[in-house]
Image (cartoon, rainbow over all chains, first blue to last red; front, side, top):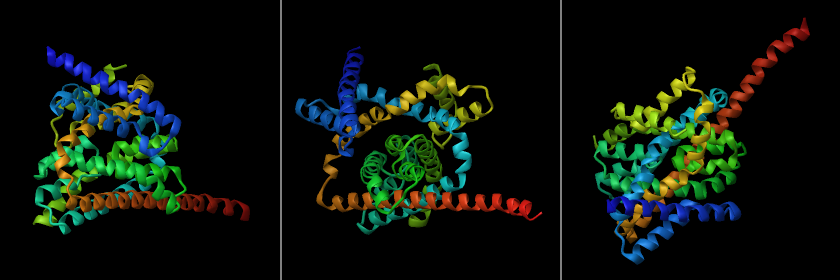
Length: 230
Length: 123
């Protein structure tokens, strides 16, 4: 029963920090102030100062995290709504996402191998651009360290949404929809959240790219593992 | 409104496929909508609310980094830099291929439409 009350308190804490963080971000629009970053930073500081264990926070945090599954499922609605956009762009989406995910996995694994990291870390790194719930399952099945996977997925997510748009502007990508494909296939759901700034088409394309890259990831990951480790 | 999420999660819990339940659930829901059994308008408002507040759902797993602080040693900085670079390559490549294919298809489509026009003018 007390676990229930603590859980509710942790959810209340998270939401209470998230709401002003969102308002702040809407007003200032600096990528560094994205609500996930600010809220997470404040919670980490609170936990470190008060000495509350992560497990205690997760009593409530788990319930919020459990909404990720339905959130992925509910993507079916915008997917259907943008059916015409998707039909017109099937080839760009498939081409962009597949190309990106193959090269992304290759470059990520190469860096880890060159630095001499062990097998479980290399495998944990492979699905870094795949949405968290899928990536964790994939790494786990292939013998990777799944707890590091969530960390790598977060790094890929944040670096993609913070630097991705700047870099895409720099190489002169003009089409807002292409921003959606890039963000969705490199930075999964975080990229999708960021692509709200590039209009409905970008959101639709980034959500499909995220889904395609999750499916591509589950197909390519075992292949990479067998190439690297025979 | 929330009933539709439960339908989604229910579908996902029934299928114990390796391809993660949430994606299978989403594909199933997508097919059901395409067949017209569920109207988009029924779940539209709720799903867009959930998705615009998606960032909230990432806070708990991100807070989990607190247990990985020992991972951040000098040698791992290179790994993280490599990760960031690899992510940016992924992002740029997929966006560039995507944009390139989009313009290619557009010009292809224009050519297709242009041919019958020329025919009609020559007749």
